[in-house]
Amino acid sequence: MSKAINTVITGTGSYIPQNIISGNEFLNSTFFENGNVLEKENSEIIHKFSEITEIVERRYACPDQLSHHIGAKAAENAIENAGIDKESLDYIIFCHNFGDIPLGSNRTDVLPSLASKVKQRLGIQNPDCVAYDIIFGCPGWIQGAIQADYYIKSGDAKRVMVIGAETLSRIIDPHDRDSMIFSDGAGAVIFEAEEAAEKRGILAHKTETHALHHSNLLTMGKGSNPDETSGNFYLKMNGRKLYEFAVIQVPQVIKKAIDKTGLSVDDINIVFVHQANGKMDAAIMKRLFKLYGKDTVPENLVPMTISWLGNSSVATVPTLLDLVLKGQVKDYNVKPGDIAVFASVGAGMHINAFIYRF
Image 1 (cartoon, one colour):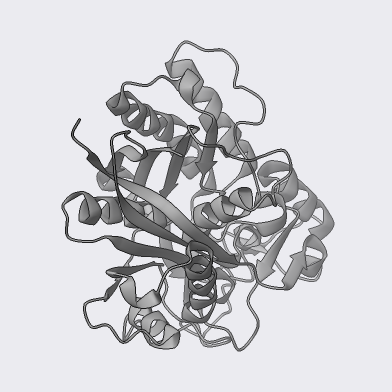
Image 2: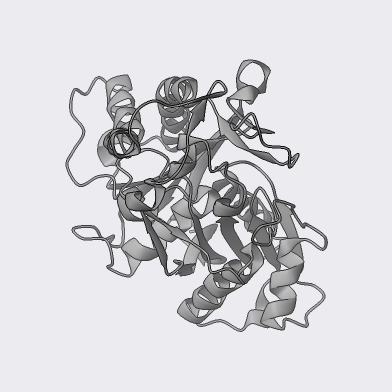
């Protein structure tokens, strides 16, 4: 029997910043909408926000930490977890959107690439270890994993590390209530080639870009405070339209990925979905099962960390995976043979998913 080349996960790591930012941190904020101060009490705004998103607290990096710093910490953890020689890595793919942003500057630094900075920080000497970045919105880490699969299946690589890290606290508008969604964090995963008779690891994947009519749902824009003169641009989103887009489009992309494998939604044991909005993720799952003629979503299918970690963009999925594999998400684990969906949506507007057998 001929053996197939599988792309399998052999190590995971994450870095969760120590600064816990609760809703109370925003009680003295001044929020604007359409140039006017919101008249509601901040306590009411914060409560309604948490009710809609399920976010109670989020994490911010320490003042002296940059994105590549926390990405390197997650990478070190993944390398140790995999038990590999760091010099054996063929690629380091660093997925982010804003590069390194020093506290208080609102200016991004992507020269050299964050992947190169991590390689230097890890002390990797091997010049055949190629380090580069991906800017792909929140789905960046999943797209990095898909690229790793291509490298491995083509025979070009045996080991690829994909990092997702962001310090969104440095690029948010303090006068925009949507800023309460975003947080900082990092996750890293080692993918390796495995020659085996049984097909496992990444089974199939699907990516779409809906740019023509939807690329303006997440953009950079001026601050909400009309009196601001700094010239800074901040992360801005059309939350309502983004929610509607994601709930309609993401389930269809996930279904296309599942259908490529010949499996059904009933075969899925766990779903690692981008932690963007708790209620949105629940609606996505409900719509996915509807596409298969199912009226209910099984319990304990979708582990969630958004309530205490917030939305750290590209870091949410690899961080969630690391926490589940290490038994740090209550009532969730994976065992050999389990089928998982990995899925995300974000600026671009990009949607992607891959199906994985543990």
